[in-house]
Image 1 (cartoon, one colour):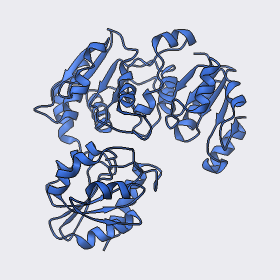
Image 2 (tube, one colour; image 1 turned 30 degrees about the horizontal axis):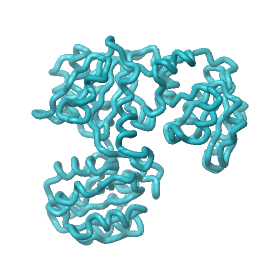
Image 3 (cartoon, helix red, strand yellow; image 1 turned 135 degrees about the horizontal axis):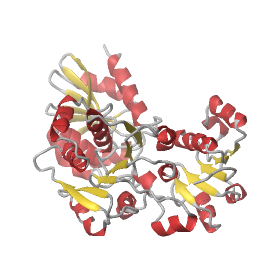
Image 4 (cartoon, helix red, strand yellow; image 1 turned 60 degrees about the horizontal axis):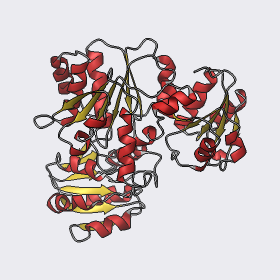
Length: 425
């Protein structure tokens, strides 16, 4: 794709939007940014960069004229695919690409893309570790925290790009027909991995079917020369096999951690010895904010599971914590159903400490199953949980909710939790 002097309008200027803007500038495009938030939502450094690179920026909402004066519109992951500026662009026949799809235009290396409702970050981290242990050079990016568009021009000396992709990044993918129409390269990973499917992000997607369609579009542009790795123990992913054009490789997690089983299948496709997988798994210490042990105070363990933003993620945590639990939860509701947790809460949780926007929903769901205390902040929840806990208990932050009501992201929430715990007497 030749972007020289093309008008590229980017919707949203948070981290991914800024990465997109900088990539487009390096490719000599005429870059414009449309941001729903105010000018205060960007840093002084970013504003200075806009001036230095002659970037036109509109704040406080999107205007139709600004969007329609574009050769391409590129959408940040935080912007819904049916947002007004996207509709304006499509009505004018302007190609609309998502961040991952746009970055893929400039990637010459094989991409291993991983999605699913749970386990994505662990799996991409392990795939990267296994490949590096086998002597390969790897770029690890995407939804894990480093935008693909920020890394794509630095992959010339890499052997593989390992990419974590969310439903937000997949829902905008163009079909092969639209790719031909707009003369762009469709997102076509050499290996696509779909780990599992369960309800998530239903505050963004209108229903589970729309969420499922976004996730499964990871296979959209693959051909028989590519590979699709699916979980044969997950009925929802297993049923997709007939629709996939790539070579299907199923992993069976009945005898092994499902994340490990998925990584092992990818390694098998790439002719990486199984012994390297075993050594990598043994050395793996987990990822930050996913069932991360923080500290023991007077026989009480404090565990940071801030990444658990769904019911299924918290079920996973409960299955691995053996002590009685003082549970810290809450945040921004993703319109998920918490009732599948009621029995486990009854069996495992001594008391629940709830904070954030979802207080009422959590209280209504669990009030007949466990004692609940509502808290004005996470710090108050931690302090009150410590006062309630006794030796042998576990204080577990496993929110079941997004973080955006109180924190920038789940990473910030987890870091604040660890700071609070490390300052406890």
